[in-house]
Structure formats: C-alpha cells, structure tokens
Image (cartoon, rainbow over all chains, first blue to last red; front, side, top):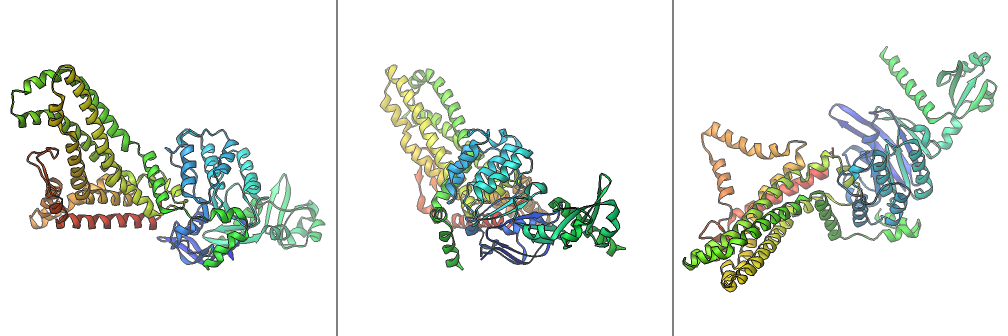
Length: 291
Length: 310
C-alpha cells in the first residue's frame, strides 16, 4: 500500500490557486524532499496531507481520507507544521508529560535521550529557550513518536549548520527505518541531498519534477565545459548554463555520460543547481508565452 | 482496508505492535485538563490570592472579636446571627465574584489564544480530538472553577472559624453559640447549591456563547462577544421602538435562577433559605438555556475541527 496517494489534488484560497491538480504517490519507506520557492504550495499540500485543510480531488494517507478521518490518522502521522508553534508557557517537562499522556506511540526515554544531547533544561519554559532550542525540543518530541508518516515543513529553520547536520544525521540513524515515510520541505536544499530517496519540485501549485534520487543521479549531469568545446556542448541542448570563475557550467538532462566526458569535467549536479535550472527554464517558458 | 492497516504494524516490528494499544478517552480528557491548568494558572491562583487576602483581613479583625460579640449579645438571636454570619457571607461573595470574573476571562481566551500564538498547530499534531479539547475547556467554567471556588471558600471560612473560636475561647466566650450562629457546614452546602444552579446551570449559555466567540473570532473576541447583543437591542429599538430583547437579557442576567431557591435576604447562604430544586429543574427556561449551550459548544467543536487553524 502506498503511504500517500493523491489524484488531482487541488486547493484554492479565493481566486488564488495554491495547489493546482497534483498527482502524487509516495511509497512506504521513502524520504521525499518537497522543494519549491516561497508560495509554491508546499505548505498547503502538506496541510492537506495532515488533515488541516479541506481540498478538492482524491487524497489517501495511509489508506484514510485525512480530512474526514483526521482523529484516527493522527495516531499514525506526526508533523511539524511550522516553526515556533510550541506554546511559550509550556515547560519542557510538561511537554514530555503531555505527549506521553496522549500519544500511544511516544517513547519518553527516547525523547529524553535526544534532549540529553542538548543544553535544554527540563524545567525551562519554551519562552526561555532560544529559537534553535525550541526547534530541538519539538524535534525531540516528534522523533520519539513511532509514527508511520512524518511530515516536516521547514524543520530546521532557525537552526545553525551544526544543529541542522546533527538533525538530519539523527533523523537517518535514530529515526528512519524502512517502514516509515518522511516528507520534508526545506530551503537548505544541499543539506538534504544525501538524506532523500525521492525528490519533488513544486512551483505555482504544480509538480515540475518528480524523480527518485537514483534517477536524479543517472539523469542529470553537470559539465564544466572546456572553453574550446563550448559550442559543441551547447549543441547538445543543455537545460541551463551558468558561469563560475569564467568557466561555463552546463546542466544536461538524459545525455550520455561518455559523450559529455569529452567536453569537460562531468559531475552530478547539486539539487540546488537543478532546482535553479528547472525554475529558470519555467520562468523562461512563461516569458515566452507572454511574448 | 482496515484489516490491512491493522496487519501492517505487526509485520514491521514488535515496537509498533505494542504501541498499538489505545489510550482511553478519559486519559485524553485528563491531560487536556492538565494542559488548561498549566496554561491558565489564574484558575487557581486568583481564588487562592483572594482567599489569602480574606484570611489576612479576617485574622486581623479577630482582635476585636470578643468585644464585638459582647456588644452583640444584647441583640435578638436573629440579628446576632445575621451580624456574625455577614462576615462569612462577605468572604463567600468575594470568592464567587472572583469565580465569575475568572470564568468570563477564561472562556473568552480559551479557544482564541491557541490560534493567536499558533500553538494550535502543535496541539493538532497530537491525537487529541477537537471534541475532547473543547470539552476540557468547557469543563473549566462548568465544573472545575465552581467546585474549586466552593472548596477554597469552605477552607477559608473554616480557618477563620477556627481562629475566631480560639480567640473567643481565650476570652471566655461561648464557642458553641458562635458555631451555631455561623452554621458553616449548612451555609457551605447552600453556597454549593446556589453556585451550581444559579451561576453554572442557569448561566451556562453565557459561557457557551463566550467559548463559541472565542473559537470563531480571529481577534477582539471580547468585542465580538458583547457587541452583537448590544447591536440586536439597538436595532430592535430603532426599527420597532421596542425593547423586548434588552428586557429578555436583563431578566436573564438579573433574575437568573430565582427558581432555584427562595432566600429571604439577598444572600443565599442564610439558613432560612429554602432550596427548591424541583421548581428549578422544571423551569423551561433552564432547559432551553442548556440546549442553546449545547448548540454553542457543538459549533465551537466544529469550528476548531473544520476551520483553517490559522
């Protein structure tokens, strides 16, 4: 059974279309990165998945309708919908007590273990913690819940790079196993490149790229082109071209690696580079239509 | 579909299968209530603070108590009792006033604050239903605050009674007469009855309305709670030059629950008060009010469940 299945998922706020007919299938045991510019509809799509917003179209999460069957679904789904949503009056110990009290799958020892790696005091109130510590606390609570689907919307916003690295490491080593599914959105794209199993770009409410990381690595190649081969390289119709230190870097989709190797140094692009390439080609296409 | 769902966790490891056990609804309710008490410490801090002030004042005034009691002994028994009990009644009235103020302010904030500080996104990520949450919040003005206030009132009065008795005994005056005049236990039961009938059951629509507005209004919940009734009254006056709505509200607020008891005096704790629960319970207005309250609360649950949280 797929963890998430969506067909024609659509959501409009008045005349603004936030999600414009998304078809989506996420299998169990995947880590999907949902990448998109601000206002692309990521959060709306995630809110629909965790039953926070009504929608049009078909959507099943763990076999349930998230809007109508939200209460039973919340035992199997966990999410961080936004940063800084922990109430400021809450004490750390109270947060642990409460989640332990209401969640059948919360492992308190595990949460205490995560917190032990931080400097967060048990007796502190959320308002006394730094922004980064609040995120750490929330993550400690969420990662100690044995959920089948974890939805993280910008989970590391406000954390410094050490904490972000630590977070994704522990997400992989302490949390993830093949029976769980994780969806994560972030703007710090490079940091999750090694974490993801699947990649999805979303722009203006539509999916503009959807592939597994294996596919990503075999499909997309970046070439630092030798100056003399530039014309030949351009003839192969790169998706995107950019200049770094006077050298041209061209990004290709589905072009043979051997062939590219004759033009310059070939490497796998970063998600961020591919993202920029896809988004600018979208913008170019739109301008073309406008003209 | 369900069998498939239930079968899956067992195949994917023991920890999931163990964690499958349900948490009973009562435990959810308990933790939802704990949350309210953590978040709104005024629920118990305010009555305790008032009780402390009352205790402080009472203890100081016991200095003059033997003198006052000697002066009172010249009066007839009914007026003696009245004079003695009035001190205790004042304490009860202060605490009841605190209860009403705390209730109103609690209700108006209850379902709005979690949206304002966005913490609703955290609460809704946990498997506590909206019905449980609203029920826990409603139980604060309907159950927790009245019972707590009555208990605090009783303890406060009892301490004053004990200290006064000690002072009187030391001055060689009759403690037994004093206890009979105060008749604390009877007065406390009357107070409890009065609070549960007049301030809770009869006033239930007010709390229900405040909770509903709190769930609905994005900001300025207090204005939204107060202005519509005023607007209806004003419109009626302008359009029909009548004041039925205002009269209805006035009757509801001032004549509240007069069916519950017949007090000879203004205060219900007087031992000559007759409780009339039968008459109270057979008042159609009471049941109409409770039905309206239920509708308000159901609407509040729906709003929390089906509206975009922020």
